[in-house]
Each structure stands twice: as structure tokens, then as C-alpha cells.
Image (tube, rainbow, N blue to C red; front, top):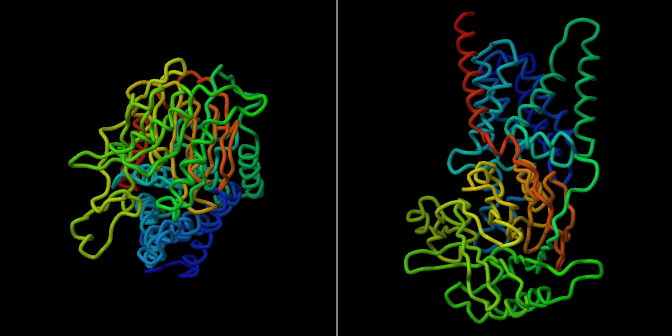
Length: 495
């Protein structure tokens, strides 16, 4: 039952607040809109006199936010409209409403812990975002901290990680929304907004990053997803990548020491791809090439990355271990296959098999790299799980699945987050874009725009010393949140 002077209007208003807050994410990149949306929603949260009403507000806020931020999710279903198009509206609405349950739960628990105060949200809301990143394989896409990558505040990711930075944004929103008493209440709110604006509008780091003596070539064929597997188009895209690989460096650029092709860059499974691999190695003229390929054995199919030696032989392999649910594999596939429902990205009925976990690839003088295939760059804890600290991160992705706007740009923002968190450069080769070299401060030093075909030769930045977050991970903050919840329970019992 809604018991508030605002009634059900508060739920509708908060839904709109969530949609406004999503303007903080790419392609808009307006963190002040996020602050405003959250602040108005939290002001209305103070009118929620029951946990049920609070939960409705949290759920409405999340639904509006995720419907807007994740609107690109319909794009994969439009690749094969006849087969999957009917799923698109259900996918967006159900995904947004499902993810919003985490926020609804946070608001509900917060009101249980304090019937009148808002402070428990400082614990419950960041905890909900942390849980969202881990539970059911996790989906931390569009977390609030993602909006900070282009500013000095984003550098906090290297110190405390993304989930603490979520808490910082929430703390500012609570500050703005707080019902200060006395004549200076409005001044306190304005001060919070001004400080937040300064942090999100100040560039991350003056001056260029330190560069190594090595150069990496990023290949972007721009193969639209609906054309990628078309037999008539396959030679076009393959020849394009060969041509880019063999091209001389542009004036002023160094000869590349490593060439990177994107995810599933060739259509042939690895066991029958030897002729193509020989051509690729020949075009590279002795420079190592890393490329995405599908690999199979008698029992399984893998989304993989391989490194070619000068003769076209495979010197190293990596199998993607964090697969996309409903894309690269289907939960309950035996049941759903009876209804003709299969994973969107897999080329076989049963979907892909996950690899054993994070591993490093050795690129000689360039150092070791941690490979990330597409979706794996979304997870801060997966990158932290590397067996050793690499010299750089390397992402191969096929962002043609994500449409032509928000999806690829948000995916790039997450790659920038991983670079800041680890204090490591990240080389990113994307099929349709955005291919980029990212320095350890999360800044793009060289890139190739969305939906363009071409290549870019980029100097490889030097790594920074290990960041605090790369040493600690998420466990310390999880313990702080647990203690905060325990303190809230004890405080509630004493009231």
C-alpha cells in the first residue's frame, strides 16, 4: 500500500527520474543529469513511510534508468528479425525490470533499517550494485560509476574500484536531496552540486602518458552483423583485413610490433582455417597476429583467441571463459531448444563452452597481455583474477551486435574503466568499432571511429605501478557493506 502525500504519482515521477539519470551514460555523458535524477528520486524516497512504498520507488527508478541506458539491447534481436525480432521489446522491458529489482530491494531494506532516515541507502544501494555484478554470472553494465571515466573523479576507480565510486555518486545525490533545516539548507545542496560538477568536468590527468617503444596495429573491418556470415561477403571482409594487415604505416607511425584482429575475425573454425592463417601470417610479414576465431573439438565449441607465428602456426590459444547468457549459451537450453529458442551469437545449437579462466599471453618484448574477449571487459573482478599482473590488457570484440549508438560507446567506457582500475594500457580491436588504444588513465590515445573500416597504428603506453584496487579487489568494500548492514540492524533494534 502506498502511504505518502504523493501517492502513486511519486512512483511515476521516480520512473522519469531514472530515465533522466541515464543521460549520465554514453552516448550522452552528462553525469550532472544522473545527479539530478537520483537527487529528485531520493527526495521523494523521504516521503516513503513504508518499506513497500520504498521498494516501489527503487524499482521504478531502476526500471526507468535501465530502460533508457540499455535501449541498445534490442539491436541483437534485429540482426535476424524473422527469427528473433519478436523478442526485442520483451528483452528490453524484462531486462530493465529485472535489474531494477536490485534497486527495489536496496530501497526496501534501507527503509526497514530506518523508517525515517535515508542514510541506509549509502550501504544498501552500493551493495545491490555489487551483488548485480556477481549473481547469476553478473551483469554490471551501466553502473553509475561508468559515467565518470572521462573525468578526474574516474581516477578513483584505481584507488577504490567501481562499487565504491557508485557509493560516491549516491552520497552526492543524498547530499543534494537531504532536507537540511535552517537558512543554509539550500546553500549546502548547491555546494554539493558544484563540487560534483567540478569533479566530473575536470579532465583526468594533465600531460601525456609515458609510452613504450612498441607499436600495436588495430584492425577494424566494419563487418555488419547481418553480413558477417554471408558467404558472398566473407571474402570481402577477409581480404579487407589482409589488406589492412599488409599496409605500410602511415607517415609518422612506427612499424607495428603486434597486429590485433577483432573477435571471430574469420568465419572458419580453427581446425580448418590453416590456409587462411597462412595468408594472415604472410600479410603480417613476420609480425605476430592475435585474432578471434571459433575453436572446436569433438565435444565442445569455443569462442577463442589465437596468436600466430610467422609461418601461420598457432603459438598460443585462449578460450573465452565468461560467456554471455542468452547470447553465447542458453540457460535451460534443452527445454528452450524445443521451442526454437537458441543463443543469439553462437553458431551452433548448443552454444559455446566456457574456457578454464583468465590466462596471460606472452608477446615477447611487449610483455604479457591479459586477453579479454568482448563481454569479459565488463567485469572488474575477472580482470583482477589474472594469474599475474600483465604489461597490458587486450580486448577483441564484435560490437556489431550492440547497434550503432549507445551500446558500442558504453562498452568502450567499460574498457576504459578496466584500464584505470588496473593502471594498465588496453589495446582494443572492435569489428565495427570503436577500436582504440587506451592509456592507464583511461584516456583514448588513438582510435578508429564507429562503423568505419580501417586500421590504426598506436604506440603502446607504459603501465603504471599496481593500483590499490588491483591489489585488494572487492572484498574490503564488501566487508564494509556487511558491517554497515549489521550496524543498521543493531541500531534499528535499539530504537
